[in-house]
Amino acid sequence: MPPMRGTRALAWSGGVLYVLSVVLLLGGAPRAPGAVHGAGTLLAASLLAGLLRRTPPLALALTLLGSVAVVTFRPAPVPPDLSGSYVGEFLSFLAVDAVLGFIVATRTRGASFLAFAVALVVQVLLLGGFAHGDTLTVNAVIALLVMAAACMVGLLSRERRAHAAALRSQEVAEAVTAERLRIARELHDMVAHSIGIIAIQAGVGSRVIRTQPEEAGAALRAIEVTSRETLSGLRRTLVALRRADADTAASEREAGEALAPSPGLADVERLAATTAEAGVHVDVRTSGTPRPLPPDVDLSAFRIVQEALTNVVRHAGTGWCRVTIEYGDEELRVEVVDDGRGAARATGGGVGGTGHGFGLVGMRERVGLLHGDLSVGACPEGGFRVAARLPLPVAVGTPVADR
Image 1 (cartoon, rainbow, N blue to C red):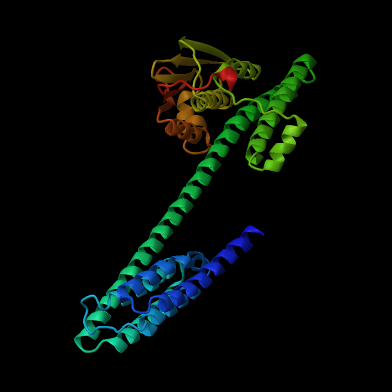
Image 2 (image 1 turned 120 degrees about the horizontal axis):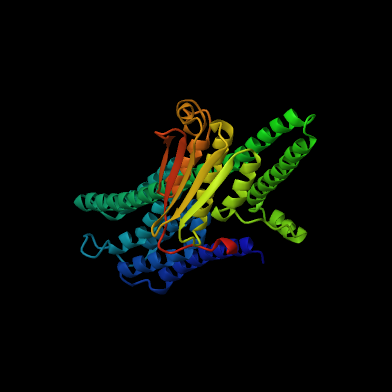
């Protein structure tokens, strides 16, 4: 039997058993106290749990019928006061109030109001048939208060679930936004550097293609290598975005396509060599004890250096810059300094510009996510400086070679 059919059959079986339990309760103990009948009816209502989840209105109708039957048709006489006489009636209708609270918590306001009105009318009419004068008023007030309490619990449950759903939606929206920003940073940092190198090499090749064919050929080879690396990086990013699709991931594994590790500070020398091909010599200096870094710190430090070198190539107008990597006990410091047009870049564009690019924004976002500091600006003696301080956790992450 399919699971859905089994659940449906179990729910309807519970409804049938509830009716049989009420009939047996009335016929098996006709002279038992009213409290016994009320408690039995309340316990029998637990059989309606499956039916309540599937069709709450039907569960409410069954509990109303069962409570009315217990109060109306049991042969034991009902005493005229509240000293233990109407306990059975109130116990019988507690099941009705519990179902009413569930309807208020899970159904629409219109359905909840209709269920409340029906339950109230039935209880008031039934109590009116067995009580008179002040007793009727007291019983009606007690019944109304119990129903109001059940409805209040249902409303609080509804509001709590709505609040939880709103929080989940907000968390999902924030996660989507954060992921979009992360992808934008990765694409910008990866593509901007490569396109800058390609543009420089293309300009060199176009100028010397007739007079210095060998130089032009070297420029074209550099363009080919850089463009292939860029395409590979873009492909890794796109594959990572599609890895949530199990079929795609399985097909990629079957095809034997392996993803390259994320870049890190171990790749700075290769980055410096690529930048040197664009005409900017990079002096890489390392202080402290190099050691494995957490993947997010390692990647962010590399991207900061990459973006800074990209802006040196595109905006500095110089053939030299220095990259300093300092491994501290509690933090990692990265600095990129050049001797180019520092003041013009600080007021016009590039990494220190006024919003014409996304390089500075991406740097600040990366550093901010790691709770670090970023300093960008022109040097007093000329040139431009980008310095980042990234705190390191106590537990060092996975080694670069193992990532």
